[in-house]
Image (cartoon, rainbow, N blue to C red; front, side, top):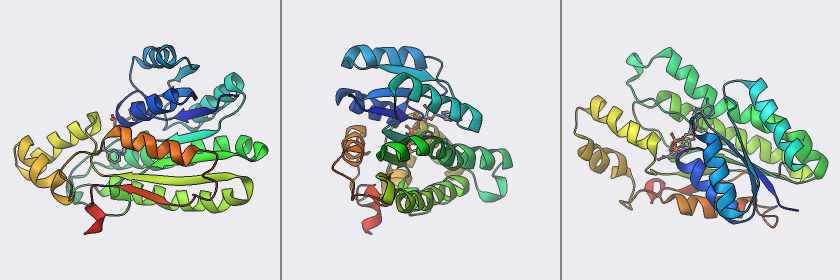
Length: 256
Ligand code: NAD
């Protein structure tokens, strides 16, 4: 029977890349995100790879919509084997100018949603004795950068959640790991380049060279395909002892 994965925020950027990698490996998929063309994206990937997909517009800020998305997946595919918590937003500003609403939004989407999705898939995974939860954290889950109070707090938080779920899942056949990428060139990062340019008073080219990739020893953006390979390994049946970890793919950022 084909395996099923839910990938939140999969109608753009890293999530979409992960979805393509999982579809290419025969997974049926639940697409999710705020992009208006989500249903078309899901149908296109299904056709390209000969798998079954559907699009859920569930807003990750609403636990009820999260539960409905998981219930729809279980009804359509019979089970959810893999959950990838990827949806994320960013806002960059000095602490004294950081809008309260942006703090709440970032904690809600980047951290609390992973609690709600994991809680919703847990009973099914527990019943079948198999589950793989993968949290797309960030190098900002283990290192800080100025002007990113909410993002760094949320990403540190999701690494804590990863460890707790790994411990609770261990006797149940459920693993939980985090992937911590350095910079990946996606729409989220394009937005940050503009914000950082404003905060630092620099041109966008200067921000890429002097601020963003400054901390990476390898001066390249992390390829989405590499994140796909890592996620497929973490999702695999043989990876049952690989749990509670942070898989850092950061171009040597944290080696320093
Ligand atoms: P992106 O903006 O391209 O994609 C984010 C996705 O999340 C979109 O599909 C968006 O619709 C969805 N989303 C946002 N709010 C949502 C909500 N309330 N409900 C449902 N979906 C929602 O960004 P990306 O760069 O692909 O980021 C994906 C993840 O990777 C994020 O968690 C981000 O923090 C993390 N990450 C990104 C980078 C990077 O350099 N791009 C580095 C490390 C970690």
